Length: 166
Image (cartoon, rainbow, N blue to C red; front, side, top):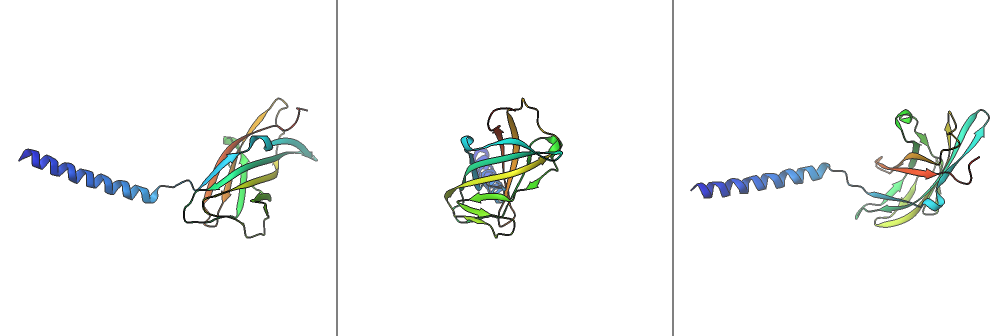
């Protein structure tokens, strides 16, 4: 009798565990976009506009939409330098291409079909208060791509300096 009750309680526990797992799957965020950085074509350099320093950031990615049933329409790109002191310093990027289609601030967006990969290029004159030191070789940036449902697809990249140091 005790063995039968134990087996029944184990079955009930297994059913409850499966129900909990199914419930958690409803709220789990799946990564829909995969970013692959192409290091050879990506980097940054320093310029100046009057008294303000400007980092010219260029990043080239292979962007893959892993969704089986939904096309992704990229509508905006934001970026900032990584680090705690730059938390509120997001800048909207106006110069980016997805799959050879240039997207500007007033365009409706660039589509990326389901289960496909396209080249994503971003160029941004990033305004900073102070130029990085000359010995700095790499800088980290956080990039967000906003889609048609206003979901944020994030990536953090470390970009190397283009050309020789000044």
